Length: 244
Image 1 (spheres, rainbow, N blue to C red):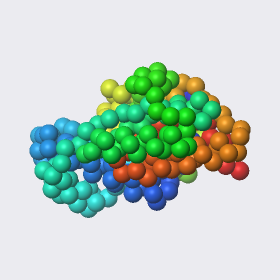
Image 2 (image 1 turned 120 degrees about the horizontal axis):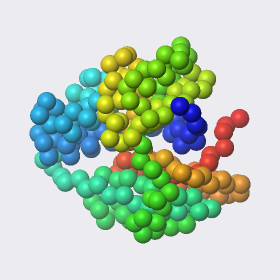
Image 3 (image 1 turned 180 degrees about the vertical axis):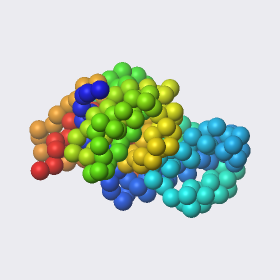
Image 4 (image 1 turned 90 degrees about the vertical axis):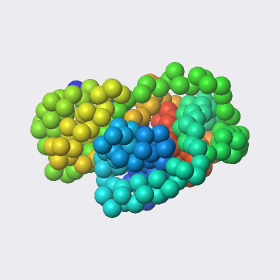
């Protein structure tokens, strides 16, 4: 198992911030509200809710927080309808950007996302304009200075992972979308904890920016998207330079 994912370097940096952690809670709360409205509050009979709870645990959300999120989601599920929408657009320099949103107001979210792209990018595009540059994968990231590469690789292979990379105490495990839940659960059962664990759109090619003004604007675009409560995930193929 080999290879290197620039996508993971970008994602891992974001996941370490307090704001990104808070975003996880907001995201999971909305997903829970949708799942509960569709299938009820009992994870034993609601497979989708059971998956979201497993995702929360994989992202190190404490059990008390999960319980509170479920109670809030039960209340929210009766108040509004959430709609899943994916936007595709271009950042500066032809960078491909995919935005996954879960919103109770399509017009508000569309207007916000369009405004961000118009101000700091090259604009939104039609459905399919950039999605062909990405492939959906299950991606799990483990950070632990005590990790043993050989043992972890054996455990990943046994769990059914598709690929595995290891560098400086950090491991990235990739799976097919269909195998993601099984691999995540198998590794959690072995005691592994994740920095992040989710389905992701991994780019097949990357774009670099060299102009400082474009770099500033691209960062601003991503910050605005990440800060929007309606936005669940942002995927892009910007090859962000490593920090010195």
